[in-house]
Length: 228
Picture (cartoon, rainbow, N blue to C red):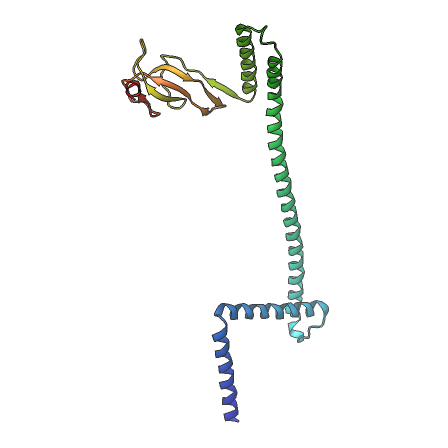
């Protein structure tokens, strides 16, 4: 008997050795956990169906197990409901975001369409009968209408003048060039107007700055430009 037992032990050892060689510890642990979970679930199902046999002194333990199963199922049902509600919320939020983007673009387009009407009317004019003064007047009218549309969306112009102090937050110094009556570090001339959206600068005004003080914005000397 002892030899047979030892033989069985050796065979079992060899089997374990073979398993260790063919499977990683993580795989063995995962298989063990899966088997244990399956056994636990079998016990739970037997307890629910009344098929589980147990000693009288274990009755309270089984009752506690059944109560835990009921709570688990209730919590899982609530979790599923919350997950579905969260998915619906995400779907509604995404749809609302898309609708908001479309509505905002639609408002801009609707505001700009009348400008196209002005252009169409201008193109219908007879070039032989329209003077340069009429053309300039039409351009000024369209420009004024466009500025009103921009103002309706919170856009305002940055319109510095010669002699104003240079503001690196709103002005971009393109070059340094002196101007009569302009103090050093102040704007000597304006190249283009800038624009703001609310309090945010979306394009600074491009200016020239009178030399004499360091200015931000990478200004270059007007003399250097002339030499180039």
